[in-house]
Image (cartoon, rainbow, N blue to C red; front, side, top):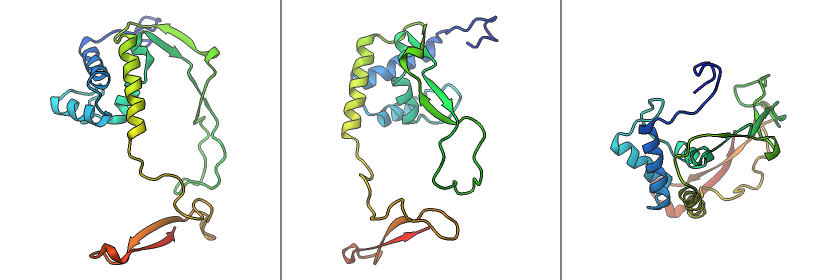
Length: 187
């Protein structure tokens, strides 16, 4: 609960329906060894609502929940700092100027963290088992692309607009894959 709603004192309140969902997610990952996407499918199939009313569950949301040590009773304030953005090689397409807001998120050193006691929802063993399963899932996850696939990837830019070229592979014949691919750069 925010300070302005809590009479000047910030605090955590456990909503038991949401706590039940959190415990179920940890059990699915740690005990049943499910993937993040399978957990999302199960949550969607059971009709479990998300906190802010979104229609679907996403793997990034579940991963963020599983990585949050606040569920073990150890919330931390000040884990990251927001700094001015680092200079870019070239401007983003459609965004000619940089934002004046501090937008680069950097981890703060652990000695600057402030630990806040919160109610425990998950025991340490279950949390560690979930972290181990996430690491195992990450190890076996299919990678879309490993490393650079093009000789000049990220190095060539258009002389007119300044944007980078990217590589694209096209089939020579859409009906016959055996005829090979045509590889080219495009802007």
